[in-house]
Length: 198
Ligand SMILES: [Ca+2]
Ligand SMILES: [Ca+2]
Image (cartoon, rainbow, N blue to C red; front, side, top):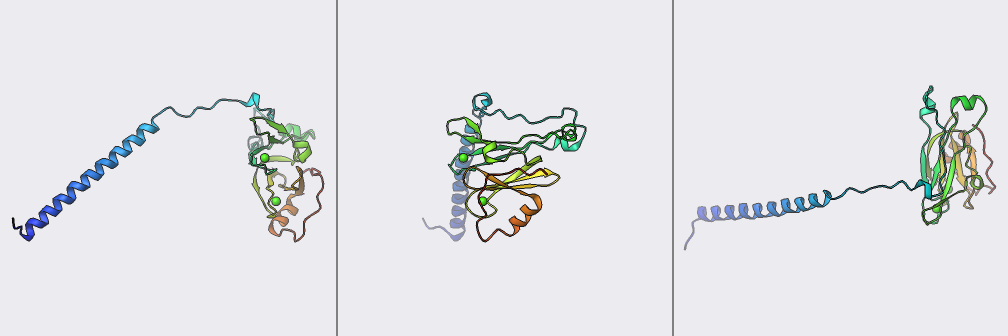
């Protein structure tokens, strides 16, 4: 059979439409299968706090008369000892009433024990009282390989430099900002942290 140019064009166009429809059908089928998979049971969470050894309690002010009383409570995940397991740092702040009485609120660092439990290492690490803590960030500001903690606080932020031995050294806000902007050329002396009130 001898086909004219017009017949060949029509045949090619029909073939293209046929294969396009077939491919679209396969894609639609794949999307349906993916949708079916997503339609399965949603992941469930179980409250295991009581079995983890975490006893941190955030200071609360139910009446929240002052805006700062509703701003605290940031949580940082940091592998401060670089064992490959994330540890948890809870920030805390006193209520205004507590602050007026000179009372402080204790933030807390929990070490991950690798078995679903945590140990409070706040006192050894020296990170219990950064001040009126709101939240913070984790980063290796001096590029020594050890993650450091920057805590945002009412009245002045605090930088905790990680000494690499389980302790963190406190730097008050102005010095912290200057240090972050211009890291020291030589390692700073390693000492146990002394909290500085802000
Ligand atoms: Ca760790
Ligand atoms: Ca560091």
